[in-house]
Length: 297
Image (cartoon, rainbow, N blue to C red; front, top):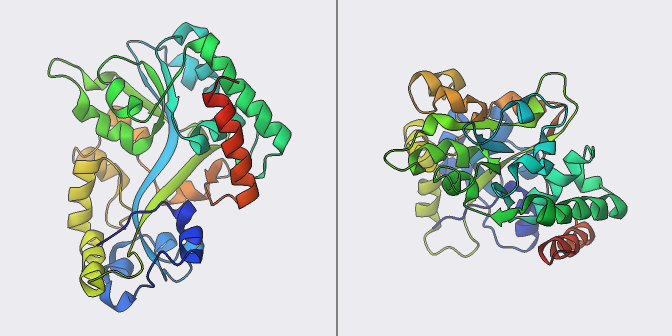
């Protein structure tokens, strides 16, 4: 009935005729409830093929009983913590070439990873390869939301939604309040960039019941339903009526994970890297360098 692509792949999906054009007359909740900046987003002007689903920033998660917060929050470039030998054996990075390589490029001072030269990308891959011996690093998908709560890791690259949801993955005798999250773009006085993104909802081309699919999208955009989905998923919807401070006051997000809340203005920060689709040649180059990283060089 529905599909949930990241907005980076929306142009490619449209070009490949994978998405059905939307009839917004069936989706009045888009204008009624969604942030104006995402009700008519730059990646899909006029919301011709997609509507917004959830938001997330990409930053750093850690346990304060295993990692000294000053090694992250007190640094000019917070990403350096992934190269801090103190945390060898308890450090993880997402098994995702765009996230891992972008983080290494940010650590190396690159402002826009999508425009990085081949030499800069090779250097970023080399710096990740260093982590095999230096940090005994692990590449995971569940490390942030599952393995940190379980105590198997103390430090991991993290999507904000994974960290907000991590509180529910602690064992019964665990203490979720040891969790922390930082989106490096918000560090005062920093010039270091950090990624921010969103997922969308769309209807696959040739859907058997397109009207019903439209009604599903409209249902998901209603504020009450979006909040219920947030409670289950941990990823925040871009609804106008969902105030960031109230998410904390009403218990949706604990105070110690407040940094995981995404605000509409975050997308406009000079230090925010709003991820977009890589062109084919650049994507091929990234994939080649990621293969070098995963093979150990």
